[in-house]
Length: 101
Image (cartoon, one colour):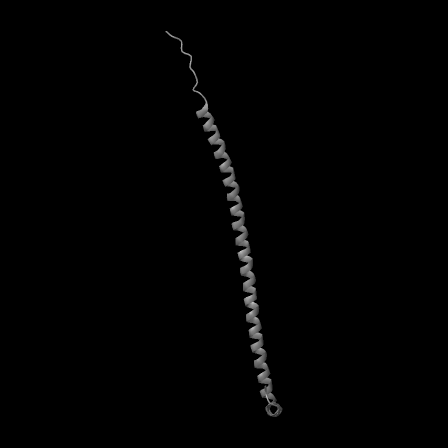
């Protein structure tokens, strides 16, 4: 913590040289503005990144859902064709009626 004597010295210095106080305050303000603008830019970039990732995730989710539905359709078609093939193999061969000559 700054001692009282030191504070008094600083106050006297600024009273004697108001231009110095003005420069110190302007520098402080400029640093604060720069820091604030940088943080604002980082926040904007983060929001854009989150938005882009959300869009990408939604696209991947939609694509995965389409593929899942296609897989279900193909499995159902495969099961139908296998059942049809099994029925063909289980059926006795057709008898052909030949007439003797």
